[in-house]
Length: 513
Ligand SMILES: C[S@@+](CC[C@H](N)C(=O)[O-])C[C@H]1O[C@@H](n2cnc3c(N)ncnc32)[C@H](O)[C@@H]1O
Image 1 (cartoon, rainbow, N blue to C red):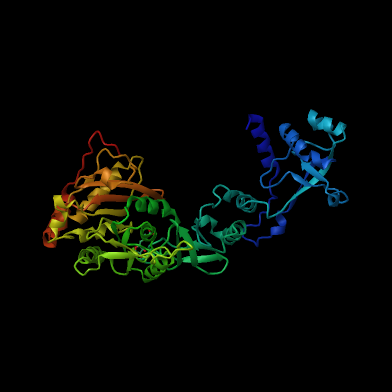
Image 2: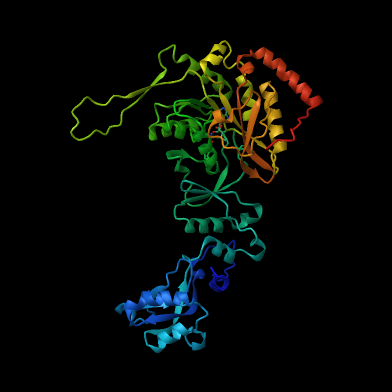
C-alpha cells in the first residue's frame, strides 16, 4: 500500500468507530451499537458498467474500503433497488454535494451520465463490530489499556483467566466473546491456579456465559478427543510440544507416557505406528484416554493404564520385557476393509508386528514435579544389562522430562538449574549438552548422538512473566539402569549433602546455549 493509501485506510478506520456505550457492569444492550454513517455512493445507471467503474474508482482511491463491507450495494432509492439498480460505496472524503471532492474520473463519469453521486446512509450494527470494537466502546477509559484478549478455546468452551481489575466486567466480556465467536457456547473464568485444585492439574472455574457444559470434543494431531474439561488436564497451548515429541518417535518403537493425560502424545503416536504404554493417575483422564483409543482406532498400539507414575516407570519396563516370554510380543494390525470390486482371492490377512522388548522413550509431562519421579529409573534394567550390550545394537531409553524454571534470554542458568535437579533425583551426575543450539531440532535423537550424562534442555513455552516450561531429554545412563537401589539411595544422600556445601557448574566458553 502507498503511503497516502495507508493514511486513507487509517482515516476510514477512525471515521467508522462504534458509538461510545459506557455501560460496563450493566446489561449488554446490543441495540445501542447501531450507528448510521452518512457517506456517498456512485449510482451506476448501466449495470454492465459496474465492474468497469469499480476498477476505475478503486484506482482513483474513491471506492470505500471497509473490512467486512462489500462496496457494491443495492441503490439507496427504494424505487430503484427493486429494479436491480446498484451503487458503489464511496470513501467518506467524497461528498455527493461537493463536486470539488470528486476525482477527474468521477467527474467525467458524471458528465457522461453513466454515474450519479448520491447520499448514502451506511448503517453498522452490533453484528458488524468486532469484540475489540465493542469492548473499547463499553469499558471506561481507565480499563482501555489492556482489554482482555487472551483466552483458550477448548471445544465449545472459552477459558478466560481475567485479571482482578477486569472481574467487574466479566459477564459483559463473556457475552461479547460468545456473540463474536460462533463456535463458543460456554465461557468460564479460572478462579484459582492450575494445580492448587488437585494433583490432576484441573482447575476451579466459574461459568460466565452459556450452560455449565464442560463435555468437549476437540481435535489435535489428526485425532479426536472427548472429555470433561473440568475433570481432566488439557492445554491447547501444548500442541506444538505434543507434535514435536511425537514427530521424534519412530514407527515400531515403544514409548512409555508416564503422565499421559487424555493422550495427546499417546494417541497421535499410536496413529503413526508407535507402541505406547500410556498412563495417568487420574481415573477421568484414563477413561477419556480409553475412549480416545477406540475413537481413533489405535487399539493395537496404545495400552492404557491408571496407576502412580513412580511405579509405572518400572512396571512398564518389566511388562514390555516379559512380553516375549509369554508370547504376547506381537500386535495384529487388521487389514484395511477395502477390496477391489471383483476380488475373488482370500480375504486380506492382518499384519503382525513384533513389539520390541525394551522401551525407547519415556515421556514425563508433569512439569511441577516430574523430576521427582526420576529415582524410579535406578536399576530399571538391573539383571538385564546384556540387553544393551554393544553387539545387541540396542540403546537405553531416552527420558523426556518436562519441568519449570526461571526465564532468561539465553537459558544458560536454567539449563544448569535443571541439570542439577536431575542429578540430585537421579543419583547420577548429568550436565547440559555442550554446543547445542537453544532450540535444536530433535526430530532424530540418533543424529544428536547425546553422550552419557548429557542433557538436551529445550524451551517449551513461557507460563508466567518469570517462569518458563522446559523439556529435558537424556538417555538413561548405563550405570544407572543396572544399579541396585540401595547404592543409589546412598548416592542421592551424598549428592544432597555435597550440593548443600558447594555446587558450581562451569560452562565452556564455546557453549552454544
Ligand atoms: C500437565 S498434565 C499433562 C497431561 C498430558 N501429558 C498432556 O500433555 O496434556 C499432567 C498429568 O499428570 C497426571 N498425574 C498427576 N500425578 C500423577 C502421578 N503421580 N502419576 C501419574 N500421573 C499423574 C495428571 O492427572 C495429569 O493428567
